Image (cartoon, rainbow, N blue to C red; front, side, top):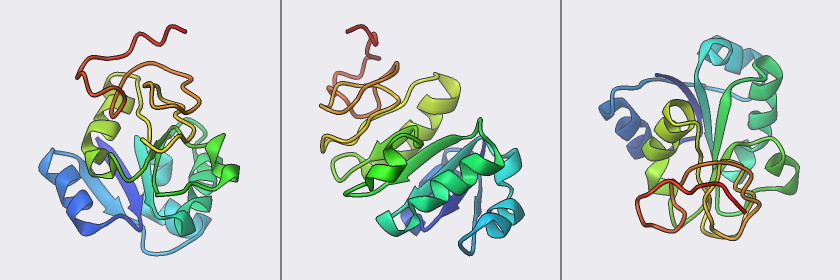
Length: 146
């Protein structure tokens, strides 16, 4: 799987590589840097840190169909309607699960701190989709039923 990252901690980048994903790290902010890193051809874009949240919107402007993950303790409101998965403090080390769940299973995750969980789960956020990356920790995909 092709993954572009920005600001992601090296241990998480290495975990993605160890799981067999091709990871390219964007070296700078902005559309040109993300294009150069291959966002237009990537399966998933991962940004870490509140300061990189705007890059989710930039990645989506390049490729509206790219799957997006933000790793942040407190995601800004403007990104909540754009990002597929927000990983907060309780699950931020599960980025490999989130990447694989988004692309392979069509499901996402949630943040354990009440944020917008566009991909699914039942962690108190706005669960708009299927499966469970960090949800109820039962290891089973959520049904998505309300």
